[in-house]
Image 1: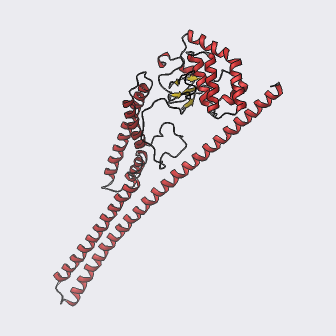
Image 2 (image 1 turned 90 degrees about the vertical axis):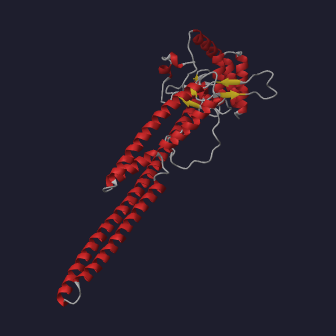
Image 3 (image 1 turned 180 degrees about the horizontal axis):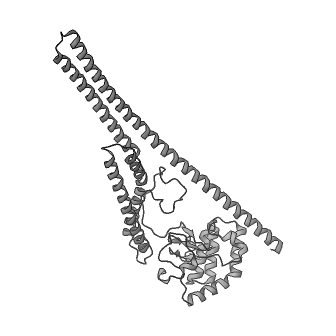
Length: 387
């Protein structure tokens, strides 16, 4: 490949990368706008509901005042008539007025009770089935707009919700720390890990957290499709990988490659442990677009990086496994040839450099997967964080 072709190839690659980044940013902004739209609509609905309830209360207050006014008018009218005609006993008129007042009071109390029942029904239907953050906002709003004697109850409920949320958050932090410790252990307690994952899922849903490995721009309160029951974490053929901040990547769950039946005698399975950190420096930068962990060739790349670091097999076997994994990933014949020949020609320097770094005590397998954006340069400064 001449120099012009290399430059053209690099330009096309940069163009594709920029277009991909722009499309991701556009989708992120669009999803954020949709989420904000849904949040505003929900708040408007709650506001509308509260305004309707407030209007009903004011209407009942007006009815009550009207009843009292009618009662007074009735009394005054009755007295005037009694005095005027002096033939109708005043006690009879008073008894009739009392009966009317009692009836109107009973009707008013019945309407107030019906209003409270509607409030409770709407709260159960529209608030209790939401995560705790929406319930906290709902109770805070009602504590501000409710009249006595309901306001202290809403204030107490609001305080209990916040205390419950803070307790759940503390438990989540403890369970996540315990989960990372168990996941990185050599003798994994799969039963305990599965129990922790199940309890974490419950806690995430209660406080409205975004679950692990789910996009943060997706509405976390949208109904989720039915999924299979949680299973213990074990090496799988599905690769889970997350980027660091300095063009480094970390494997977030154990990954396994198993040779086919006709390959088993020559090759053995490869297990890439969770926490393994890798880069893209095995081949020249001109081929990074084909080797990037963001592409379909991520699994072969991770296998090659791990085998070059582990060095428990010969470099020739590592390169052969890389070629087979590329073919299994569906890479084109031309890409397989280019990448394999590139590794065979330029990989010795990376192999020797890994051996030198291991001899100097460098480690590449983290005990805990970073939950916040981190740089590899900073992680390397904490030797206690490595297996």
